[in-house]
Amino acid sequence: VKKPAVVVLGAGYGGLMATVKLQKLLHPNEADIVLVNKNDYHYETTWLHEASAGTLHHDRVRYRIRDVVNTNRVKFIQDTVEEIKADEQKVILAGGELHYDYLVIALGGESETFGIQGLKEHALSITNVNMARKIREHIEYQFATYKAEDEKREELLTIVVGGAGFTGIEFLGELVNRVPELCEEYDIDPKKVKIICVEAAPVILPGFDPELVNYAVSLLEKKGVEFRISTPIKECTPEGVVVGKGENETELIKAGTVIWAAGVRGNSVIEKSGFENMRGRVKVDMYLRMPGHENIFVIGDCSLVINEETNRPYPPTAQIAMQQGEHTAKNIAALIRNQELDDFVFDNKGTVCSLGEKDAVAIVFGKKLTGFKAAFMKKVVDNRALYLVGGLPLVLKKGKFKLL
Ligand code: FAD
Ligand code: NAD
Image (tube, rainbow, N blue to C red; front, side):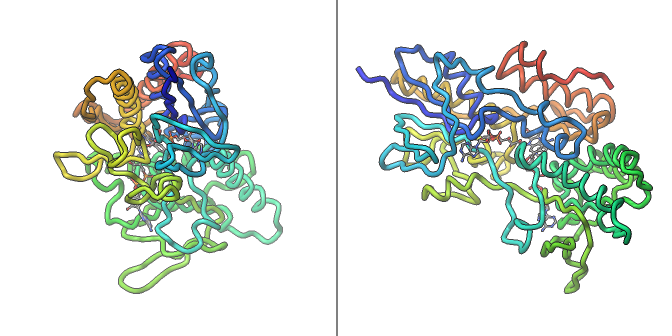
């Protein structure tokens, strides 16, 4: 009898979690498991702001897929997914095609530019290891150029961060610790460096606990960040960003570095494959399946799950992606065994927003934390993610242990 092929696309939080659970749950006689990923490594997307600022080397945020997946059991294909042809049960890869009986789409998100002019060309987004390296190098290059030129262009030392959501704030938290080191390295007066965060909404971290927001803002302001709220980026140019000011006016903020951290959307493969979507995300059913396709599961940043209490989608996070990955593995095993499927219920354990290595704000199990305790909690969360995928050996190899 031919075994069904279970194909997982993407080895991020959702896909890798689904794969390691599938390899545990399914007997080799029950199904073939295939994992496809662009790179031969997994990266911790949730640590990319550190690699981007240069406070953590990019090799610390990634590990080899072969170190956590049993390649005797799972066939790993390093390739890029281009399109999914659901009517033919086929995945088109850059280097070939792949048949599936069950499919897990876990390709993660992409930066959302809302069609704002110039962002794709002139701004940088914290999206993967390649971009993290580029951002780190770009900032250093601006500092080096400033120093090497006779005519001083102080705007080279201005860094604009667009968006004060969790990504923007966590990146700023790292940046304020990195800039003094850079100033030392490049012989630059720290007073000349400007870090400006522009946020379209009238508040920082919209929707987050106001007390914790105040803590974060005052800490970052003390370390030199200038916040400009109700200030939407309208355009990005080689000189910097054009922002809205008051009713009808605009202003050019000159900057050598523009980081766009103002939103994510689902992977473009979703749209390219013709699936119904909202900003690249598929609204899944209660089993995390794509409507109309009983053998396709969509998880992580490519999926949209409605929170019944608020009637709004859950924000895309690593936390929900990992839970979806585990749940999907169980549901696929059930499908193969002709058993009942289980509904997905998100168990929200809270949110921790780091403010550099030694500080953070958090709501964990409904309790507010700041400072040392919250920063410690961040390390626990980071190490837990490693543990859930690769057990203790991975924690020992890649974990964060430096106490504050
Ligand atoms: P990812 O983990 O992004 O993985 C997608 C995988 O698919 C990658 O391996 C990628 O290489 C691969 N891939 C993409 N396209 C293709 C293709 N075409 N072909 C083949 N492979 C492909 N969430 C939290 O819960 N807590 C946090 O503290 C937190 N911090 C964050 C900090 C930052 C700086 C950022 C940017 C995000 C943070 N998030 C956090 C959000 C979280 O990282 C995402 O929600 C999560 O990564 C989504 O998981 P995923 O499995 O959908 O995708
Ligand atoms: P986000 O959508 O949460 O925040 C984007 C911010 O940019 C918003 O505050 C928005 O008002 C602002 N914005 C939008 N357009 C703008 C414009 N034109 N000019 C200026 N500002 C503009 O995006 P994010 O911060 O990248 O987060 C993405 C997802 O990842 C979220 O679900 C978030 O919860 C998750 N995340 C979680 C953590 C954490 O738990 N520590 C860290 C990072 C990201």
